[in-house]
Image (cartoon, rainbow, N blue to C red; front, side, top):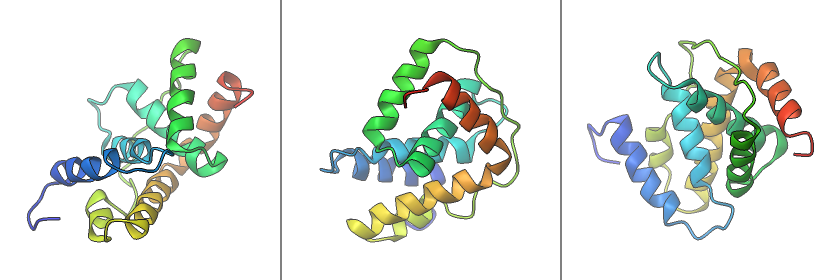
Length: 142
């Protein structure tokens, strides 16, 4: 990471790393979900927030890989159910994308991605039950 780099620039750099990653688990999905949930604001579309939280839930609570989260997102899109709405909070987690980039590439950075996702998911704790209920209703076999 370069000094003075913005969060968006750091995310773009991390995206390059995860998209070039050889792991078939597709960890890129986890950074998309963590960044979206962490940076959501009043202009973020509700589907973006809902899918980011669903992805974090599936990864952290159900141990889904990034590929499995992608497939779940596709199933949720086809379900066309009413999306739950989530209140934005000032707390979005203590770990950021810039923290992830401080970890050296390889297993340590991959672990930092997981830590970041967990930090963001934890910050959204008021939404946990709603996310879990939505996923159980829409992806009963998932």
